[in-house]
Amino acid sequence: MSMFYISLLIGVLALDTTIAFQVLIAQPIFSCSIIGAALGDFSAGLEIGLMMQLLWLNIVPSGATRFPEGNLASMVICAGAILFELPQYPNMSFALIVLVGIAVSYVGMRVTIWQRRSNDVVFGRVLTAIEAVQPGKIVAFNALAILTYFLAMSLLAFVSLGGIKLGIDYMMPILSEQIEGSARFLKPGIWAIGITLVGRMIYRNFIKKG
Amino acid sequence: MASEKLNMMKATSLGFMDYFRIFWRSFFIQAVWNYRSMISIGFGICLLPLMRRLYKEPEAQHAFLQRHFRFFNSHPYMASYALGVSAKLEEAIADGDEDAIHRLPKVKELMISLLGARGDQLFWCILKPFSLLAGVSVLLLVSGLVPTMTVLIVTFLVYNIPHFYIRYSGIREGYEHGIDVYKCLYRERFQLMKDIYTNVGMISFVVIGGMVIYRYVAVDADIAIAFLIVGVTAFLSDYFTGNSYLTLSLGVIMALVAGLFL
Image 1: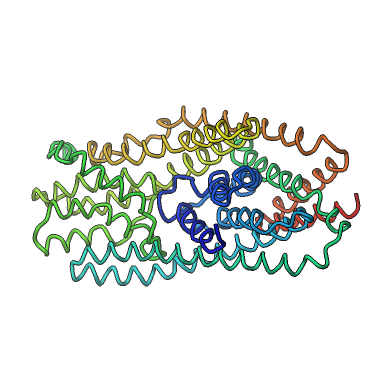
Image 2: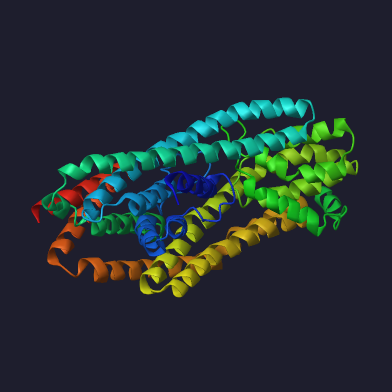
């Protein structure tokens, strides 16, 4: 599956975070497995999904909360790793992909805020539709909002994957065995971050409160 | 007395297909989430099939749209209770109950904080993290395509069975109990479910910790040291700043730095 189609798949799965369904299909263990299967490497997708899941587990997507788009970031990391990871330098290329993923989680959050602000304009149009008693138009605005978010997230995924490809192409000539060796603790490190964050969440929400 | 009167009216007039239409549309309740009216557009869209059934005149439809598209917020799953109550009151309004017109906005307003608090606590703070933790822990223990797929499906169901139940039964209970629906939303109602998920989640977290140490950390002293350094960095960053981006970036950078020196 090409970068274009995988970006569209990421866009569809990203809808699940807040826009539609919310059945957890966008959570890394599910979405990365799906992306892995779509790219022909289910086990690699699952492995990345397991690693990423703990990083974003403490996110509460309630109301007007601004939260990192961890689900989108995990999907980009997974697709980037399967598509572009260099077999001779797996750790260093994965480090670059993870750093891009963290940036994606921030940009994704900004895109969500932008979409919610643009929905304020949609609300104004809905009020006009109410005055004219046009319920069909209101349903159309609803569909348009879903389509806008899907396109925005697909575009962000596409640009991020393009950035990962460029970054890896640029990095390849300067990589060496020594630099690769310095990234050998990255995967255990990500597990360490995940376990720490989940441990803090459990302590804060349950142990401290009794 | 007024609540009894409302509960007596057309108690069975909402059929399975009506429930299903509202239930299906409720999956898109947050699609047009905005800062001015929160989830009101999605909420109103869920009730549009009811509007078409109850009101034929444009004036009545206009009044209906005015009542439901102004402002509303709730946890997306728990909003189903408000949908059920609104359907009940709309039927009363269609039957000519003037009282219901004034009650509807008040009831919806009162439900905002109750449904938000119950839903956030039950789903976002307990069911979501702990079902996913349980899934991750079992996935670390199994291997092979079929067992892995089975665990993924079971994890999906462990979360979504209560999710679908609340979405559907919320509409039903809201409709059946009318404005007395708050009696269905007492805190202790979900306590057993919360306790089960919390305990399973805690055990799962211990299993994940053990599996990660067994698989990735205990194989090499250097890895164990790097694991500790990154863990302590993430802890300090999260404790002092609470900034996710900073915590993750610092952790990744510290893992790379540890690789240079160990």
